[in-house]
Length: 102
Image (tube, rainbow, N blue to C red; front, side, top):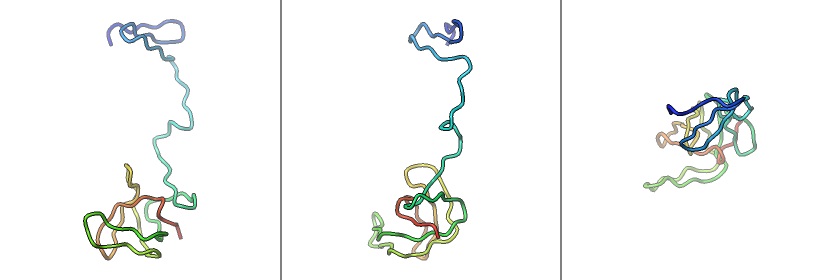
């Protein structure tokens, strides 16, 4: 905003009364890369092979993905469903909590 001004070691916005430091320290949580972990806590990466640990019903279809199904070369993506994969039944977006890295 145009009214923002420096005050000591902080910037101040008189319109909303918000203050923030001029030189904000970077924390470990500010990293751009999000770590996706499987059901056992192992980090996943693009190209990994995983196994389903639970039967999953596919929404809007009569297909069910069976426990123990092996999925090769996964891709990580953002959002609620972190893993994008292709299987014999089609392409799916899965949650990492239902996968185990092998």
